[in-house]
Amino acid sequence: MAEVIPKNARLRLRLYVAGDAPNSLAAVANIKAICTEHFDSAHELEIVDLLEQPGRGLTDGIIVTPTLLRLSPLPAHRMIGSLSDTRQVLLVLGGQ
Image (cartoon, rainbow, N blue to C red):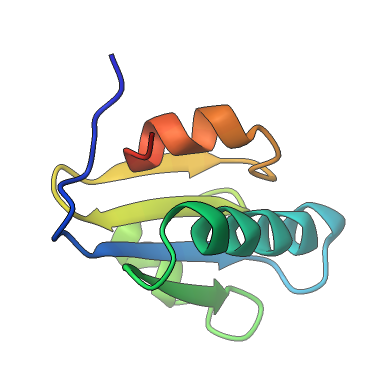
């Protein structure tokens, strides 16, 4: 069963990418579209380019890009890939 985020919860996401790699560009476009359509203004999306900030991924244990982290609401979740399967992304993020 999919986890549903409470109406008053703010979704906090961090997407790790590697420059202009095709999967990274696709992941950015896909998560922005999903957030706009399903979470409107109730989300915060941080995009971290590991080519510009390589140390940032160490804290979160990032070994492959693109990787999406749901930081809140807890529990945290992670998803790897271009995020092209909207249904699967929504299951991980807790959307309907």
